[in-house]
Image 1 (cartoon, protein in one colour):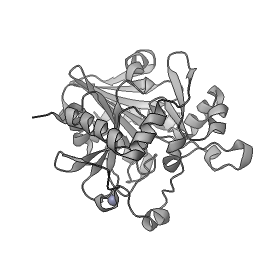
Image 2: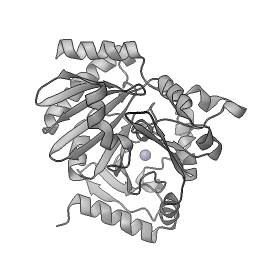
Image 3: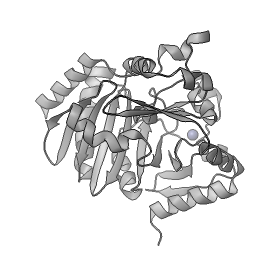
Length: 316
Ligand SMILES: [Zn+2]
């Protein structure tokens, strides 16, 4: 019996060999330009990735979504795209427009809305079954390009700078808000506002996430899903889950005309420290000052973040 990790790796290998579109886009990935900007204690990588234009410029308003055929539903997926059933409710697919050298999309078998509630335990289980991948989730208003069809994505761990930096960021910018079987940290590194859940027990982490979720919902979103991105991986016997609390879906530069326009629609991978830009003009334009400005707009406000952290402390 092969493990799911072996099956996933084999799927990627086969698809890159046999599916022309995947072959071209994965080959191109190794040639694209990347630049790095140091923020002292952490790094932001910028990837100039023309194939991502479809995702970066996706229209995700209700009308546009209703008008298009869903590209994650089995009947609309390309004939060449193979799948592996997992956990009785998802399919593993290769992402044919990669950011990572190994990039999976993990889609619900059913056409149901993007929402993390009731899927958080699966996220933890997937990270355990696919150790070596970081599983990520983009909220329906925080970067998902198919908000009408539930999906995660996964990329090889270590590719996003945050995968390796998290333990140092916790030390330098974190405060431990709950110390228990699951440790919960609040981290503000000057760019991002994160809540980090860390421990050995998936059920415990899911319970703690659900507890925090309720508070977020009260403070941020009036009963809707709080705007968020999530990363989760399993390394050396421990899970770590990073919850980025979001502000604006897209920065003002995204909608600006002419010179000021920057086509950057931040989601999990950007918050993980790898900014994706499909246009060369933006690749050249992105510097420290612009990045700080974009993250300021697309992250939750500092006072709201601290209010949430206090409530978690008090109520737990
Ligand atoms: Zn669908």
